[in-house]
Image (cartoon, rainbow, N blue to C red; front, top):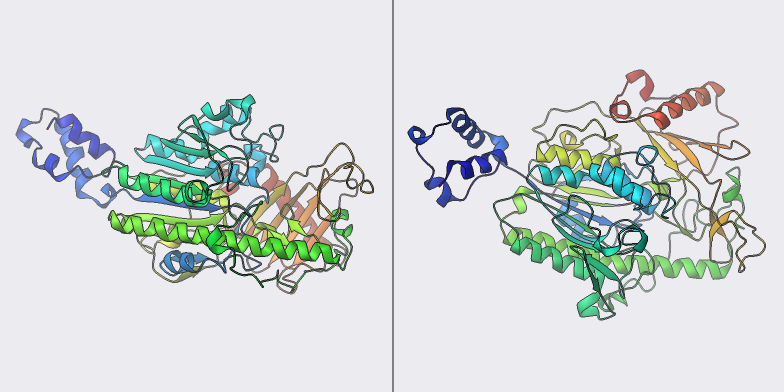
Length: 532
């Protein structure tokens, strides 16, 4: 075997097939002694084992309202086999900005995706030019990984004005990207740049199942001697909540949880939270209960997907060499503060997400309390692949928290949550009394968003368990919550708390809103905690 081929395997930190190793030339035949020594060292030390990575990403799945209840197989196969993170957060509670944060490892003020529209930089030409070259898959591919993507990408992906289905985002060898927002039937995929239209046949087209089947095909056909990264992004449990036929009778009497802030007026909150009437109309409650049931029903198909993928990994003898991550892009609410259904808000139900991980070196049945952000996923993937933390990423690898063989690291105790509100310039004819400037006014003309629903928050998790938020509106409205004494965020203490605390948290917020790269990761002990 040519020496160049053997050194290629060494460079990728993977073992060549046995037949090729047997055919390797003797040292006396090698002219380049330095290269040979590099080869021997590569095969002699532990870093030659390259780990596979799988990310399973759901859409709109909460954790605060028991959103993991339907995921019995997932909790057993990933959580019980590894680690469950008790404090995992999205840095923004909306699909496209949050997914952009996952892909780039950057806060929204650095990746500049404001909302789900092209004008808001969602899969826009500017995004493709500036941010797409910085997504983690680009670096993994450069590092020798096979990369596979199936499912929802960014909400405006595939739009005709920005390349359509012919545009395959950088870094993906095998691309099965959904055009537009989540659907279960009657959608179009870009399959490596070619449009593939799907209908309404359950056996052929149900998207969650199709993602599972395509991932298994990839696992069977991939190059077995090269490590892989696989990202599976399901439509569940996003609207339109189309349930697989086999689960249409599941959870039929389930209702949305009635505890905490359910059907409670948003007293002393931002004006958008004060406008819903409490108690809600019966039509709103019936609507949100139906949505809650259907969300859980769609997740049962995701639970099957997890089982299928893990079973296939075991069949191809890669399970013990693979890190598997399960999470969501953000949370969700159904009736909290009398808001019927949506996300977009600063509260725990919208920003907390499930996060379960299993893999080499991770002990079973762990729980970890350190706050993990979705901007930490990309640095963690690159860390697994052997990269140092990229200076351009705001997040940091949490691999050392999971793997007992790794050196422990000092971890953050506060972080930033930010959101840019959206509204319509014209009044919705169906809701003439609410006026312009608002959006997502359903059902019963209860609006979930507005232009000035724009905020930034510091969330602390240390000696103090606080949230401090400032709105960019005419009131310069502030909300502050002590989540130790008020876990459901019912009481805004902005007017009663020690003013020095407000000053301290305002200063921390200013720093976080302007941070970039390494500045976001730097932690100074005196800034970590705040006494309430």
